[in-house]
Length: 539
Image (cartoon, rainbow, N blue to C red; front, side, top):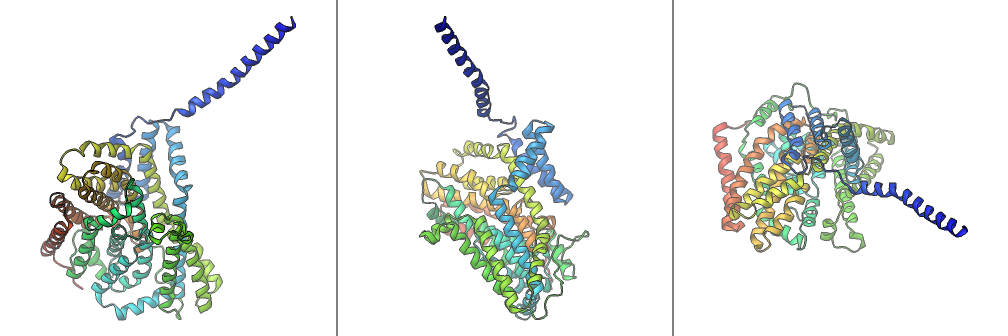
């Protein structure tokens, strides 16, 4: 009897353990089942971005347009469920992107740079630089060429380029009656297009990271002469400025600027800095130049520090492996500390004035931060809907035919994808591995195709209303964001059309020594024809 009781107790124990394990097994089974929306990796994955872009261009109101695009993405992802939409929009969207360490680093950099600009204005550095420039930079042509040159020199990162060039050159361009829209275009055109052909930049690091199984940095260097969009954009800027060519909405902005209206928008602009603030009359040019130089040096050191330079890694490898977000946050912080100490030592600002500039700088960057946050959230929506796999399948399906035309086709696909997603780096991540695999047997065509991918990504990113670089350029120039998008779109499309033709030529001749000169001649000829049709903007 006792033996039977022991057997029964043992059996009951086993059954009890199995019963307790059942919920755990069920829970584990539930966890392994990943939710996939019905619209995943279909054309619908790109629709939220197109909704936001089209609404922004039609309504000329960016905040509501971005939010509606995010909302459409949430609805598609949840299968038209109210609760699912709300959860996805906030958890994956707004909360998710604001808890991402990379994004937070960029926001910290923005706020600190805004505070530094506020201090430069209060210290009188901006006004002093404007007075100096008025005697050394002659005319509108000189002011624009100086802005182009500075933009080309600051090539380590596009975010840093946009805000620094805008802060330094805005007083100069205002003095010579250059519209904020034109300033925003020059800033935007010397940001990503210059970074993508600079070997020592955060962009070079991103590209080399996507080339698996090969010497990514060597491929990046060999691809520079084939990066027709970036090179032709620089050619176009110089010709536009020297020949005084303006067309499309930009021409009206420039004509209005000559009459004193720098913004050409009835509702005002998103100019949150007070450029007319009565800065310290004792301010000198050094009060602007030295903090900017210190900021550049600190940001470079910050970037190579995150890449392991001080642990024995070479400088090129350090840039390739750097974390641009963290590096810029570190660099801007130490640049801010230097600026505060410098202004206090010069006695142009008190410690209290410097501290008051911190919330003022934050306030000045609120429009850019808000647009960036919504643009990141929109990207999170398209990512969750499988935009990347959809485009990857599309490209792989056409990779076997039209081999000589493929660089031009890849350029076009890169433009559309970057325009819809608002990101160059995401486009690199999708297209470059496909290109490397498709052209593994033909190294020359692989280099041309990788260049086409990079050029297309930069082109789409350049003109997309939801691109972070476009948003930064608007913030740097303190131009209305939709004005910036509308005015630069015809310019970007002109260079894109010439680049597309040049990639067709490159696909057949397979050498940059022939294709690039053809592209330059075609670009200059196109602009001279436009100048003949539309006339010039005279001083």
